[in-house]
Length: 411
Image (tube, rainbow, N blue to C red; front, side):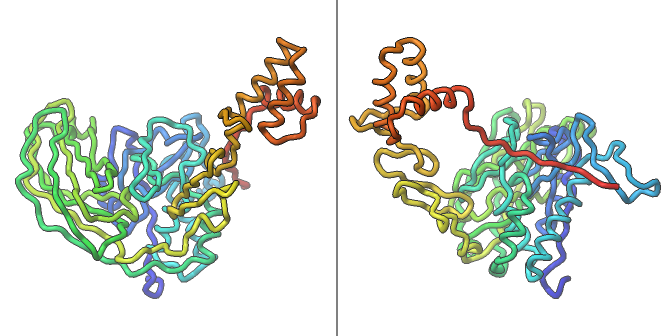
């Protein structure tokens, strides 16, 4: 499709909530689809599933009856009960269409790389979506993929995007002898793998053949990369356990995007267990297929080009993030904070202002003295009025960064 550039599919990751797992959906866990899940009011939506195959999240309606609006019904506009990942996927499609409008040469894999690069955790306030950072410095969630989709950032990057190299595929041999477990702690099978033709990973699929003596839904799998990145391939599913409550066996292909741009070389670990020890789980065989590139797909992405590190700090580019190595006396994400006074005593900025405030309130006679000391430390002009203003501002108006989104429709 698209003259060889590939058809782009977005797919709703599912509405089974955190007790369900999208890896049981053969469409969501295909490398050729973009699994889209939902967010609401700074956290994953109440109906979002655990999903190592989900790439990204968009707004999908919330538990507070904040529904989406559709203009495609026979009765015109409606917003009655419209929420779910089925509405998040079309929003993602619209953002992708904007990116294609900016650059029509983008392939289906370019689009996925753009989503991973520009999506982020920014704006999320939840503490239960299992956020972590993979071996290439990219934050990911067991529920929300690589975070919230950013239309502006994606279109901006798309306009000057260089197509990624051709995809390579690397398959391991089939591993056997993993054993069985009836306990509630994980059993581990560790394998040493080398796949130099797939040095920069995109998708990872794992074929597992396993059996269980009872309750299929209590079977849990985690895949761990050489970099230590953990991806929850399958977790405890209550409805599945209740429905399939007798012995059985299954061969299934799971997929994860959590290892994006990592190297496949090294020890991979398959962890498996029976939730609560309610069944004996036996893994008879498993194998991994790596999809990626042999060369860096993003050689031109340099976050240090804008010189974000202040006060002569050295910037280290990690593509998805950057680190500032600060010179002596400076600290902070961008080395923006002068943390050393003229006598070598380290004080935080908030501590300096706090002592200005206390000295003014409790020891008026020492006010000018303390104002002068802080002025020497911070490098500002020692003006008494400035000290008073700084003290008031420091305590009454702490700096905050807020991220929000506005959703609306005109009918």
